[in-house]
Image 1: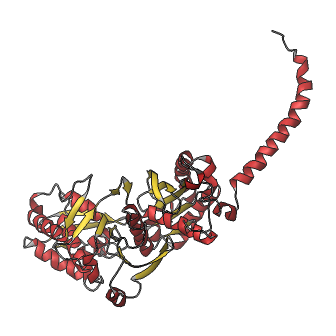
Image 2: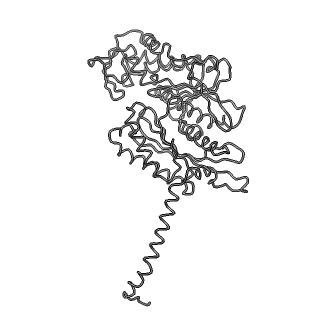
Image 3: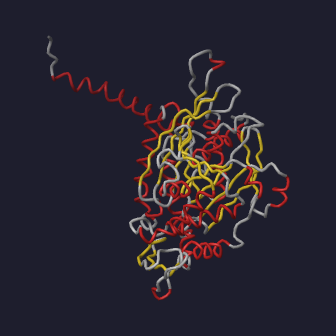
Length: 446
């Protein structure tokens, strides 16, 4: 083998250096152009960049993606959705990647810079899951819920601005509205889209839709599609909203009740005030807690001393107190009793905790099932202190809340965490609606 003399190195460098500089400059310019696509170009390629399934190109399935960040009070979650759309039909969800990190964004209110690390980690998950060719056409969105709603406005905006900075530095499609705090109605409508998309109710006119019930910690939502004119006429201001999807307009009954989520309701039933410690550290006494019980309970970073009253007919006393808390706060929509409903979150958790449904698979319950479980727990909770001391209170509250919504005792509710192995969260509905809106803005719809 011929040995190359070291004396040739300086001569070679004269040639290699300028060539390498030119190549490096070309790569840099190409990177900048790729990394910051213009919004009009990206919009026109949301479905245009789709790759196709086997078969002729004319009949191929278009594929597109969406990324939704769910910034909740206890954690931040990323959902990476893959959709396929046969020609002339509505899209279907073909894959979901999910990853969650704790704590929630609100935990970084006093150290905004630290929030960027978790956001970037979740973005890296999306980059691994989505093919390179799709990055600049894939919408990236973050919606914050209760955690940021409760923060002072200035702190919340600083957190959102930091997230937006991280998003802008990503290779995905980032609009001016990519980061925001959801209001309760949007949360309810997005969850309604999710469940009706997964059950196939949005695939064409004439299909029966289902209603959605969600019970969170701070608020509760009810959303359904009314058919009776009387429902539209009797609905109070703020209870009706319009939604456009697939060239159709849906006029929904949807309302979010702030302060009637399970944790906020507990505090109200105990006699406490949201965001305020008990006066002089006074003990909060409730007829819904086991007689003789004493303990502590933390809510919204405030610790309360709580106790039960003396022995009595616990369920009757508790039901009376819960009725006071709910009085004149919930609108009763009579038509709701005739609509099929799915129920999520604490409805599911409570039913599972007392054996009304399978904790993994879910199931169906009636309003009366919650009532029977409430009476049983109120009667026996004193002898089962290893269980949550709030079971009598929580079950009584849920059963009476459902009655206030207008559901009869024999009304069947479907409780599930997944439909076709997809999480029934609002995130899917929110990103799907976002993509649909982008496509309407650029011309052709999904």
